[in-house]
Length: 189
Image (cartoon, rainbow, N blue to C red):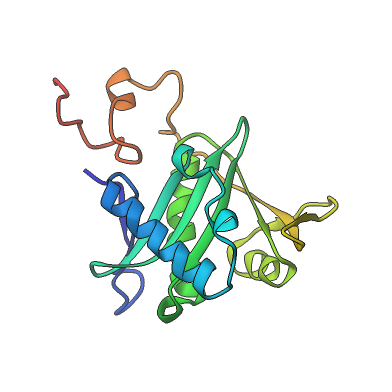
């Protein structure tokens, strides 16, 4: 009962799909991807790659077939969702592959009733987020984290009519994160 977006039909021969992490195996895959992408490729310190926010976040994992190739994390705040820790294996870095993860995340965020997504990126990557994924730079002073400059970016989302809210049927609220249209295992009709 996982929340899955199968993008293979939209991506030609590409067999990528994105899922909400709902199992420990998937969370281990997320951590392995982040270790490769951050600690190995960019030599980021462990306490930066793993900052204490992972257990209260929603994680997305991207698969090529059965192989995990990318991930991102979503944290939830009062009026917005923050997208962060986006990383792909070297073999799968590219705009089309990142788009699979981001489009899935945008849909998930909007379904939860959030109309705003933000992220922070270094100036080089901020340009990519603006050009390819529709973010706009926020007129704020840049933040510095581990001596790196980050700019804040914002994207406005369209919240669907079936967004999860206080009026949502209680049985839907018992369902697995992101799989709100799939009856829960113990749900009584």
